Image (cartoon, rainbow, N blue to C red; front, side, top):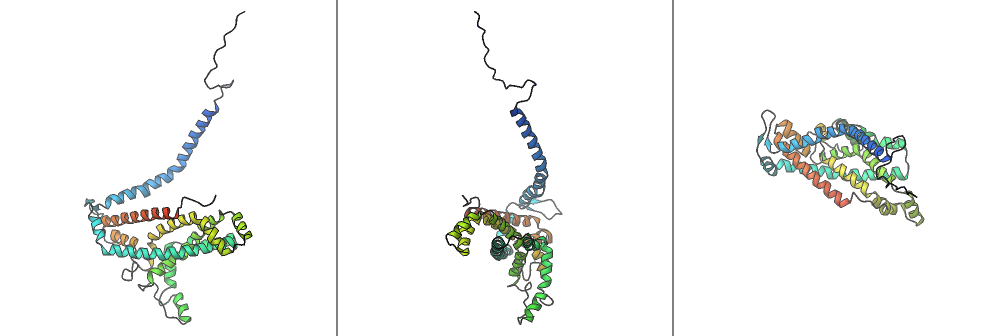
Length: 318
């Protein structure tokens, strides 16, 4: 009796009777199509990043090592602009004024935004109220600055009229060296606090209600729950909010430009306004670029320090 020899099983991927492509091949083709579609959607943003962010940054770093006034080609001067920066008293005074503004702005804005967010979350979650809170943010900095300039005018402003009607003396809010920076800081707090509050409110929404209910069962008060539950669990969101607001505060410019123009006596000559004046007022683009690079280094260092201290990448939610 003859025994038929059987051939070893084939290792090639099997096709159906009608030549259907294996699932793995179909999946790879679909992934390639998704990748091409994703690249198509990302391309405009990537192009904008390269043209309006990366290239100007690299160009600014190059110009910081040159003497450039727009009328002649850049002349390489090495570290001369940075040496001038180190010995420039106006630069350090502008940095001091900027830090004063940032401290007032961030301190008042963060505390106010946190209070508003907690009230919105614990008392009401009305969309109408959230819209009202956000309304000042929809106004441009220039418009907000002009409105408050009129309100706080020493002679005709309604703010000083109210103060005088209450028996107080008129205050030159934007014309006095003592009042100018705090006033500008509070103007920007008024404009940005609603947006910051909504960011914090979104973080509060991510905290499970079960945690609060368990604390209530244990007899914890609202104040105790705020410090022992809300603040620890809100830390990553607060860290991100602080990083964003600090970076934005160091870049204050337009409110100063339309209200005080750096005065009185350089009391509001923040760093961005000094850079602008050096570049477009005195056409010292090389030196202005050096100050911009210095500001970039300062902001990068502050961001890294904030990120590490606040542990922004970690959460206490288990």
